[in-house]
Length: 417
Ligand code: GAP
Image (cartoon, rainbow, N blue to C red; front, side):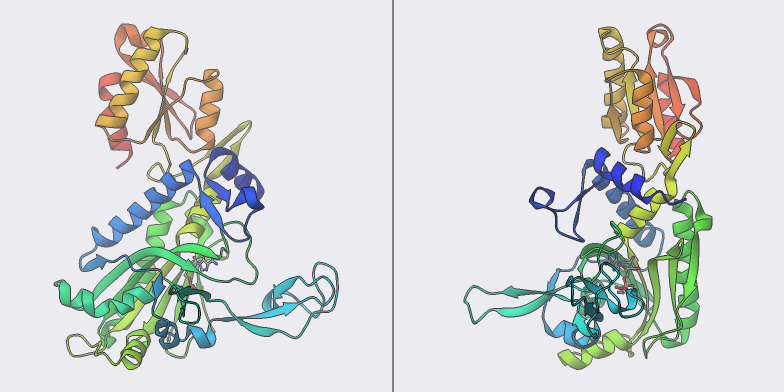
């Protein structure tokens, strides 16, 4: 079942994602994350970063600049070949990526289409204050290039030895001919990349390792891991022996790429610097994923309808809020006082992302928390004042259990392990 439209509407209504520059009519392919979206995206990025740098040995991170020297994109091959074939309708002047339209007719008005022309999708910009002396450069077309630029810096300033990895989460920019499909194809988006530097003779082994490790990682996050699959590319770059995608329902989420010594070799050649290390130019296995695509697919995958209930069955580690706390009745100060005490304790002392709600009736509050994927709701009622217990409602089963207030910390911490 395709629930994209409902998920897009939910994103706007509840503050996950807004169309970029909306009050000026929007800007195609550009989006802003709202209060819940930024929490969820940060949770995701923290999980990825810690999986890479804490759970693995020999991986360090960088945060490179978005604007780079223009020669970078000559060396990388993007100026020459980062192109999409663009075709235009002679009647309505709508533009399309030639690969996306069948035949020679405009999908919008059936007008005749022009012959496709190659269009470079790097996003240019200018640096400098004097007209005529400005230098033309580009916003990063792929984040990984700043890892190659800093390869020697990292090798010299840390204690890494081959094989080792450099990771980065950062923005990339592409003048996509056909943007759309919500977060799927944007013109500004975020990538999480690992560049794993290895000896050539260990390349096969590491390629297999990372391919499987990345799939396991994604599967551990998705509600329906069976929706993820590998796709093997047949058309390969000349240096690549193999390339796989990890796909969500046939749509690419991450690429596992055999980059060999192409990147360091080219940057060595174009910069005139020696980029060898331990006597060789290391070979590279790349895992390059889309943060926004993962975010989108996780929402689509977790969106669940059960009778009248609509809920995001998100892995609690990703949910924007872990716990919601309610007083059963907002006009009973003794209930509000006790609920506030629990709310503040969970939020400030246990450092759990906790939200307060005392609007409307309890049913509406559960509905509102279900819709944003909050895994547990704590309600303070009159019994709480007598025996120091509360109800804890589970999002997925909608079942409530009664627990002592004193056990809440350990209960949630155990659940989040
Ligand atoms: N460094 C390799 C590289 O950039 P890519 O397959 O072009 O490879 C990697 O991009 C990932 O970035 C993709 O798997 C996808 O998740 C994400 N991505 C690429 N273009 C995107 C776009 N226009 N909007 C959103 N995400 C995109």
